[in-house]
Image (cartoon, rainbow, N blue to C red; front, side):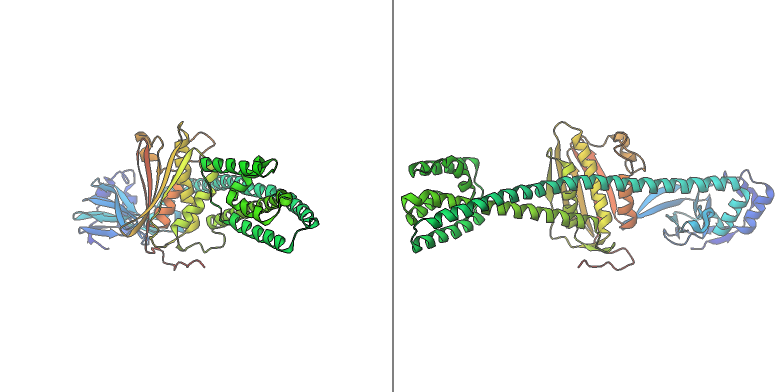
Length: 485
């Protein structure tokens, strides 16, 4: 937006703190290559537009704002002569994308000294070469440090997740190995019992009945439901009595397996009816091998399924085979992250999911959202682990207007009032030395606000801290998101 041209006076420029040390010929150059303009109330420039001018306030009131999601958040309001805005980083040239990083509007007729960005950059390099070198070093040094430490933050998170994933994979893998070894022994025992049975003079119909009972036993194992400890103990007692009554020794060793398989005395009575007393014990022990074999195969299946689920969660978390920007289900991302960090969460913390499954998929960068979830969960877990009692982590999703809200609520001690204004600052951390870089929330804020055009905020009192992420339901990215296959 262009203002109304006005006279540029050297004495007026020289009265500003920015220019008070300049010589008359320098002030004359500013007036010659710049201009004074008066702007009516309204916008002067918009965030994201090409940064073409450097603005210095001469008279009036300006307001600076940043775009957060669908809202313009005011960051500064001033009537102080000499405050500046616009292309003040033009001296960095094409090493930095030169766009306005905020929006400028005026509340009343306001005069600015306006200097073209190219002129501002040339004057800076010509008049203040040492200062420019220092500013360049400071700007790119801080940027490089943030990127390096940000990379370290990601590597630390990856190392922690890898350790947790290794631990989680080891448990079902070890269980599968143990069950496979035991299964080998049971199958060998079953072959032996089958040989014993075959050596006995069984009638054909008796063998057919035993085979039928074996098949139905296997089906019953597959459908068995868990009993309460009291119910299981009562059933074990009844089975032990049945074994004693029928002269089968060491019944107390057989009873727990039969109970786990969902078998009872009525089931054993069917076996009794199928064989004579001399061969009953052999038949029962043969069926016991059948039960143990089925239970071990169930354990192997559960263990390998768990391994597959963990690998799928790791794949979902890392998004290695997905487009970086796509339509995604936030709940799948949350679940994969919670599974990946489950070892770090530990037994002292209870996780509660309050998902609104009716929420639609949203366009997003899923790999980076997983990084945000990891950072927020890690902070919540650290806060609760600092107490003696652990706590509860509640992950909630709901609709908030045209945004999807993801809330992480913990029952930790809360964020102290004196540091609440600093929690999103780069390198600020309350964790002990070596446990945090202070970039977790800064990175999270930039991912949510800058990349997803969403909002990240928090509210905290002792026992109730809530970090809330709001993500647009509609795409704000000019590229078309890809639907995952």
